[in-house]
Amino acid sequence: MKKLISSLLIVFLLSFSLLPLAFAEGTDSASAKSADDFTDLKDLPQDLKDKFNSLIQSGVFNGLTDDTFGLDAQMNRAQFAKVAGIIFKLAIDQTLTSSSFTDVRSDDPANSYALPYIEALKKAGLTNGYDAEGKTYKPSGAVSRQELAAFLIRGLGLEEDAKTVKPVSDSSVDAWAKGYVALALEKNLMTNQEDGTFGGSKSATRQMLALASYEAKNLIEADGTTVEPGTPATKPDTPAAPTGEISAQGKRVLYVGRDASSIPAEDVFVQDRLKALGFRVTNIVDRKFTVEKTEGYDLLYISNTLNSKYLKGGILKDVAIPTVYAKNHGMYYLGLSSQEENTNEFNLKSITIADTKLKAAAGFSGDVEVYTESNPKYAIGYGLPGKEAVKVATIPGKSNEAAIYYYNKGTHSDSGYEVKARLSFYFQTGNYEKMTNDAWKLLDALVLWTLQNG
Image 1 (cartoon, rainbow, N blue to C red):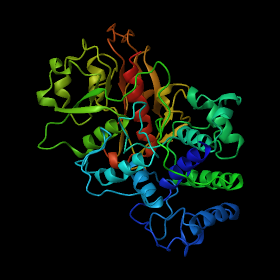
Image 2 (image 1 turned 90 degrees about the vertical axis):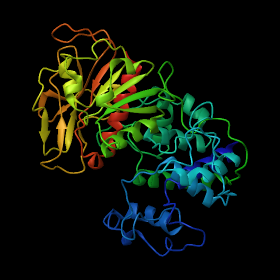
Image 3 (image 1 turned 30 degrees about the vertical axis):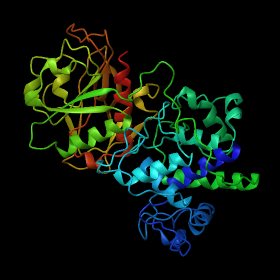
Image 4 (image 1 turned 90 degrees about the horizontal axis):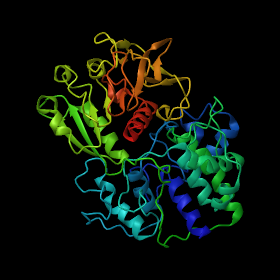
């Protein structure tokens, strides 16, 4: 069992380390390079460069381009499948057009290429999927820091130790992961962030994965473990949601956006994100939206692209379905924000977390960059919520301007309106392609928190 788990660890680490399109059997470009050949590595301290050199020259890591390693880049689970298939020389049936996982499809424009590789991984016993039932794979899914800690510890055969070690006292780490994180820190596999917290919900980056894989590789080699794939996997690749929480898997979202000949690009961004969380998404244009059409859905998402005239009068005031508004007018028409127009701040990159203990804060604290650059055309939306609202994040230096906030079910607006289901606001106003990974993580956290409908 320990050999199997260690093989899974190596697959996992390597999967996030190599570019599927750049790596192939017999390629020796990695061994010809060193850290000094990459603009984002050459100025690192020598001890770090030595670690990167070891990984690059042994073929574990390549750069994203000829001169960029890509320290902050992510990879998804679809890419993981392709690289694992190549590394382990699995039998890949390129003629496959259907998958045993419900969310892996040949008509998926982003991840269809990975279908035969994902099936090969399952056949080889290297994955049992993402959910407990083994029905989904979540090809677009990212990996959080706390999930990586769990993979590392399980891969090293330290599952039982994680159950007995003193868990971390860190509000940025979910309860299920506290033992894994404690042991990952103890073994020097991972480190805390500069603010002293672990940031469990934050996405794992290539830099962090590289350093963690270096330490784990040393531990595996010292233990003398060999890779022997082939035993069927029986557990999901990632931990289950905390007990009592509603999972997004299979839940239905009604997404209300702009009336156009095709779905606007910004709405495609968000809908893909919701699908990656496990939601089934139905798109409806604002002109055709009615309250009656919300029946049977688990969550509503009101896009910033829709025409606000379709929300006038607070038409959703009696709808008892959790709702995320990216359109501030929706909150205003319910009396949950006191200002209708001019609720954007421009030329900002960051928002300020109001309370890091909130689940919707995704483990972040202080100022969080939500745009890759400041620009007079980039706006962060905000609301002026009432006294019963919960502020998750605000405009820097303006604590009354809430960029992310929510009202719990049963709370009231200042004018007395009673909230029928949790209602949340997110600051999106456009320029989605310029949003940071942290901004998307905050959206994920808010959507999942809204779904809980407390």
